[in-house]
Image 1 (cartoon, rainbow, N blue to C red):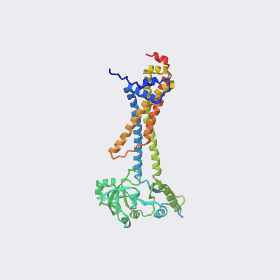
Image 2: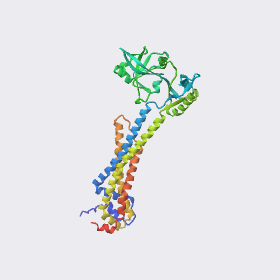
Image 3: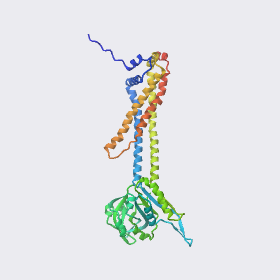
Image 4: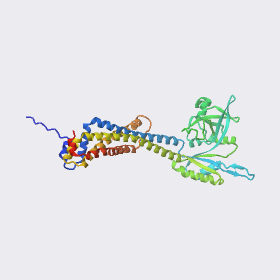
Length: 424
């Protein structure tokens, strides 16, 4: 005669059998799993809010990090190691009560190069405005900047056609020019067509040997405009008739040298001029630092905004757990009648709430990490993932489970076993 194998007792039955002793956490966990299995659809829908909330936190943090990195890269492309020395005001009073601006000179730049270590490139800048003749009676208002060949390095310029003038062009005072790309397109249709053309300034012909653009759009906040021509410094000095300078440019070997070098450069230049003259050293260090702080603050605000989804899903978890308590009144009454303490009942329902919340958080975290990582693998774009975003998402999931599961757990723990056993 075949023997019938008795059915395997459920975790609830095993827990009831040992209800008079203190419950193990493993027993509480098994009860939570059994509860999930009994109401899969309800718990999955409740979990969906946590999935969306956790994924949103990671994606918002990733977008914030990506935006921050993009903005810093764009600013850095101007030249993170650049120091721009500017004349800010101050006059020299003469014996006949006349005053002249106390501009900088090439000797100031040479003194800086001799006394400040770590400078890898430098350039003076003379500015001259005039109408240039294109032939056939056509003229255009333009800005001539007299610079050295190293200006291309200092300003991180990109030569799109032709070439930039070199040291030999500067020494020979060659009448050559490099024009900005928008100006070349306006005059000749495209940048390649501009190379080799002649532009006349004050009757002197200049050969366009190259076309350039800025590596980063400064939106009109730099000395380069849409009608700029770069020519060797000695040639522009012929037009201005002066050797005085409003601006000097320097590039340091590393970004860590920029701040101390800018202070030293100011000290040297000020020592060579009158005490009332004003000079400033502009760097990107402060701008980059401020930009990073602003980006971090925006990321935090947006992440907290995404956290509102977690709160909404927490309310859903609380409602689901309250309904769960109501549907299991008889179970609670039986367990209490067999000796389960209020603490054990509270722990059971609080564990269920945390498991429900954390399960959604884990799934949402996986989705939130998978999207940017997949895009990073399938596209050439580098998408940085904030390493703290998964920690914040999972920590928020546990916190939501505890906060919004406390009320249902306390309500279950306070139930009277006599009344619950009578409940139909």
